[in-house]
Image (tube, rainbow, N blue to C red):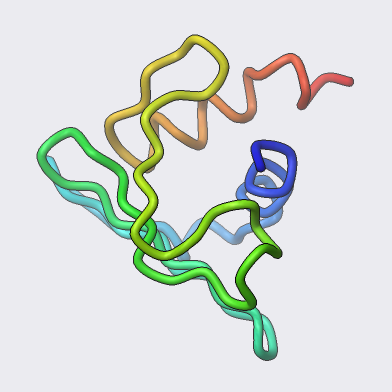
Length: 89
């Protein structure tokens, strides 16, 4: 799961990530593939992941941590994935 999501986030153009304050949204789509994440109140929720299984997460999943690093917002998730040992492998 982490490797697929990390690869996707590293390839996303910055305008795909929008947010301010305590809520933020990430939307990515290419052809039929789509991933949408939303963070609010300290939680990151997967709003869409199609086709299911491609990204290693499903609609309704919550992303709480990357390795041992808690993530509360989309920018925390992006940073944690970039800093993850898997990103340097």
